[in-house]
Length: 96
Image (cartoon, rainbow, N blue to C red; front, side, top):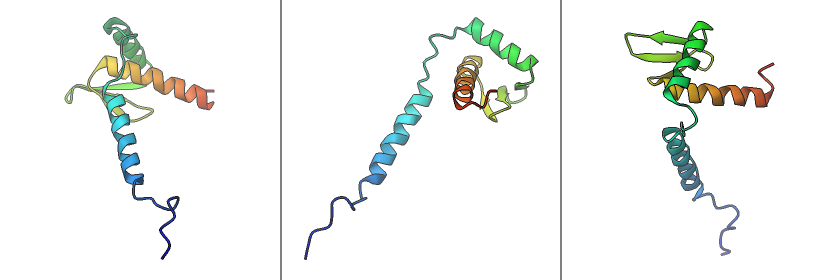
């Protein structure tokens, strides 16, 4: 009986998928916010609130980024996310 074709073996695919998911989780948790200080983040979030891009939810103490529906409990996290989100949209040509 011939041995299975190693190119057809998908038994390790789940391990690779799991590694990728863990890496993404770590990247999301460890967002580098070094280029966004508290004052810059607060100014950006205030501008986004004025432009109705961000909604404050005081009872839950969160900020909601309306275009994406993502919720944040930190102005710095929201500022970094919005910068990345805007850059991604611009790269895809959706920002026009």
